[in-house]
Image (cartoon, rainbow, N blue to C red; front, top):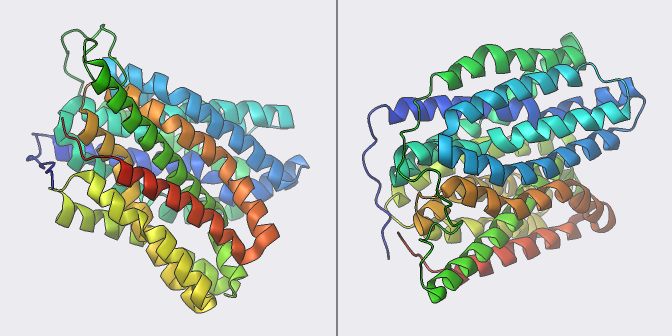
Length: 400
């Protein structure tokens, strides 16, 4: 089995990883996870159904897809520090404007701005920042960043709920804007500057190969890119569907509302535990093997819920969390292992475009399936997991 060695951390790498991880935890919480808590109150205040809030959020997710490749290319050239600082300003501006919206047009316009900030400031940007600083040694940093990110909903949902009930949804948005300006902007300003690189102005092929690479090698790389993009799209569809509908799915299986929420709360800790286990036991293995193992958790979880119903709700949440936790890391580490650090940011942005598209459609499509087929909606997840597994087994564990 090919090895993807885990070199020692470079000086300052642990501190940088902690800064990027904390930034991700608070940035996800201040934007991506807001609608789950605030949609009802926002809709009531604006006189529109909550579904309209999620429609605006879906527009933001589409903007994320368009922003990713451009943001990645900027990080490849200049490093992540200036871009992440700019996204803190965009997040803050967007959140302040969100707290002032009065019409649907304003609502959609503000979420477009927040989508721009999310596309340039969430996981892929943090991964690319780490790779720009540390090259192939960034695998450990990517794992560390996702460990922090795994607690984003655990922190943000209770805090946003407290702010909502204590002051209101507009004030909650303003508080999160303050977090972006007063906490994250100085935090990202303290990140190390990316070292200058020879030929930074040269055009880097998205595969990371030299421009004169043989045609056969280029075809092989493009096939791998397509398979990776298909895998990531399927995985993000599953993950976003569950983040939107997991408690409801568990209630459809027969679990009470209290039990469904309690079981769903296990996902976060399970994700963090799986990331720690992956790094502890599989850090020297090629990330492709981690992905192949992790993807089996999705159909296993569906089978447990389908067979056992409500008693299987806890097992479903745990199995889903374990698989999803590793796959979030793999999204960052697998392209690095297969194609190297050169052009990582732009390539990662391109790989994630289909994933962001499916992410934008997942809440609506899986919600419709759940409404029409009840527990039979698990077949949609099984199909997506099968597509991902097939693509992963078609890949070969290349290493550069």
